[in-house]
Length: 197
Image 1 (cartoon, helix red, strand yellow):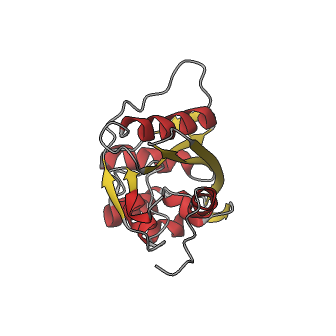
Image 2: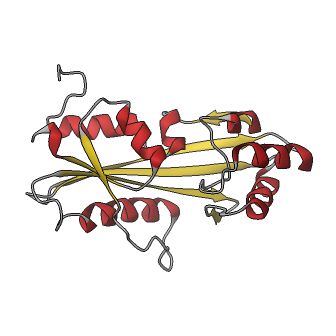
């Protein structure tokens, strides 16, 4: 498979920036799928299903490509955290997260649209939040405006100041794309990111 036949099934600028770290040639395409959960679907199942559906959605437009897709589900006390969308919701999410832990399940899959071969994996990361006061939360939200981020923070930015600690294998996964697992999947499709380009 040619490395110039890679498609990232995402409109996320964060995932695009992460994939650019691997110095691969790729294009981005919005899969435009419904991302709501199904009845009795657990967070891991949801994250994996959505990544697979995103990849499959692009098959008609990108035959003969490797399609990379990912999804992230954040859970606080058995409740899924959505992207807040606005200041009020972001403040409320961070107030709920203060002094608690949030688990992030970030899936990644690669689909060969020519053969329908698919490989996937799932990263789990736990974020332990400091006990934050309302003024700290408001200051953070006003500075970074994390309205498009599940959990209402940007860990690659000032959001790191909200945490006591992070438990996980790959800090990139928290931003939205588990690069360590992705590199393993690319290897399985004979793409070595350390090979001379």
